[in-house]
Image (cartoon, rainbow, N blue to C red):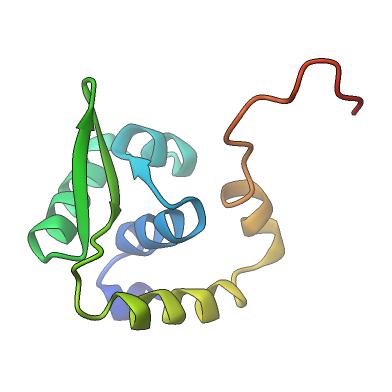
Amino acid sequence: MLEALFGNSTIEKILFTLFVYGEGYALGIAKTFNVPVNRMQQQLRRLENGGIVSSRLMGKVRIYTFNPRYPFLKELQAFLAKACEFVPEKEKEAYYRKRTRPRRAGKPL
């Protein structure tokens, strides 16, 4: 949907994932979208070099989030919020509504 604006679909997937979940890591995002992890790492590095995202190590895993010092962060998030309204419902269900923590023990389905 936003490939023409961002240059490729991998950037779009990364930005939507970080917008929806707040953070992510290269292998997790790559598995979600079934793309090679090296492509994901390359684009995350590109975004980090541009100052759009920042990363931190948590053990051996590099976690990426939006850079709070990025001067256009509010505008970017507003843009992504508007763009999320136009993502097809089937795609939202598949990629952007995953459980991020386990279900409480004994909770009925």
